[in-house]
Length: 433
Image 1 (cartoon, rainbow, N blue to C red):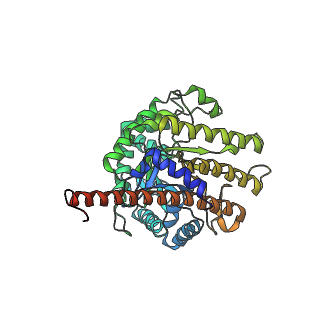
Image 2: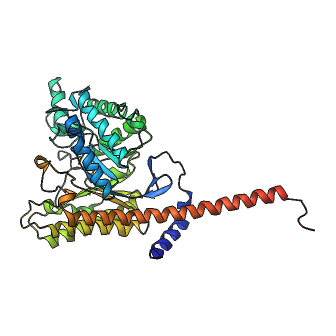
Image 3: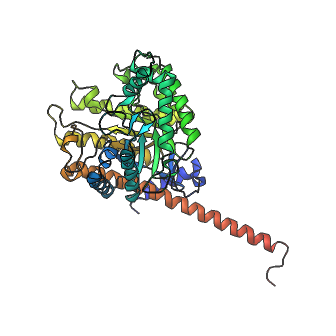
């Protein structure tokens, strides 16, 4: 009975929002229904993590045990979604070493990541290109086009040039149609994948009006959905506001990068909204309380706008606090995690749009060269690991209560159907003496 108040709230929501009519398909793909994620007919909430390094590490068979360890540790803390790179363009141990040319060993690494995630019950968000130079990104695409005689003056031509866009579309086609050597499934048919991400943190500072990125997302969302109707799609946005909501632009802290949280996420084919948050970077000269105040306002605004304007689920796909910050201590990081998790849980338990959070980043032991200050090694961070596990449990309880409510509704419908059949069979018959 300790969950009765929450159960009552969810029961009311089931009745008023029509959640009892959720899609009953049990094919394992995560869908959206209104502003909820749904898995096998039940609202789905994601407590998860980022681990961009998974494919890179798995491309070396001798290092694959680190991928397995990360998934095992994550699963033991109730984490159910991982966001990682499905790109590595040029450079060392690439996935795509030239436009349309792929390193099979690296692709097998991604195959392994997907197979191993499936083994541990973890869904994946796979990002298809980087805005930044790390792992190649849009700069590498532009350089490839330059080497073929294209006159390009900016890395932002990634979003405009038809040759570059052709390279990207080919990469999307290749990844989505990849046959997994471990699972025997094409990626586009694998329910282990929760969603595709068009690009990690798109930015086009050469066009602050937002028209360039808006057009690019529209074109590429249509391209992805033409190939793959099974999976969800998101744009990869950080959440900065644009010209459609001038009253919100003060939240941007002067960051003007050509994206628009509202118009970009309204695009057909974009199934849910994303937001990132790094108060320690964006307000680096402010104290912790100022940063937490900003975080509260930032999350409140995006939850409100996802609910009232977009009417789509919202996922916080990156957040964290760096141990390299001046005066850092674990308590400060735990405060930030608690703030994020409280906002998500408060929304979820009321049937709201906030569907989960993915911290940056999870490492496992023996990966010191990947430390960036934001890393969480669960075995070495007991207080933070405990907060993460508690959030996983809370979201699981919400989902379990939704499942109970749905089963009650199904039982009622089945009983009504049986009664209707009985009445139909016995219509006109004399009952009793």
